[in-house]
Image 1 (tube, rainbow, N blue to C red):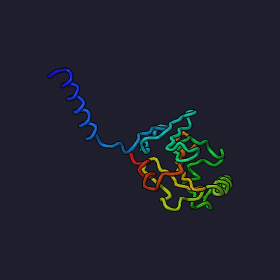
Image 2: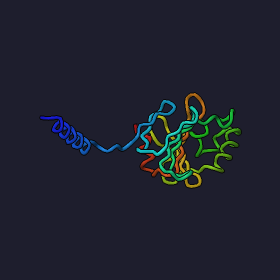
Image 3: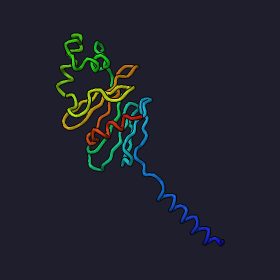
Image 4: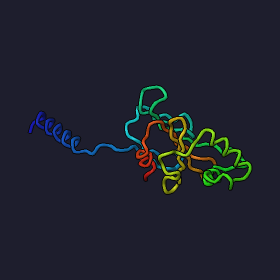
Amino acid sequence: MGKLGMFFAGLVLTLVMSVQAEPVTSLQVIFQHYRFNAPPNPVLVAQPHADLLLLKYSTAKGKQYLAFSKEPELDPACKWVTLLNQFNQPELLSEACQAVHKSFSATFKAHPSLPFKLGQQPEFYAFSSAGNTFLFSPLATGGALKIDTDFLTDQQLKQLLAH
């Protein structure tokens, strides 16, 4: 077989392998030592600092994003883990946490169509605000992991957290 024949044989093999390859269904993202299954093919990936990772799925400004961030404690007297675990029972919170709960509740509401607690380990708590979805998970090191999106469906959010 000549060089031209080898070229065409290689081209055919490449095309066959391309056709048989399975489509990419998720993008593995690791942030703050946690693994997530993000939608594939972002048009932009940015990490301006260690505590923020942004995936953009549209060229439109401020649209179709998925953001991962590490949030500091809201108040030294009220840890995220306490606030989130008792969010639906604010009467059980300390006075300091009740003040934080009141402020937090003014912006964030329990997400209407997702279970309040999602995932196995770590547990994420689902909230919504102004058409966006926010998932919070307290970190053992203090603070919380926050996931913020304006376009993922409930099913895609569950897939995001599936390991």
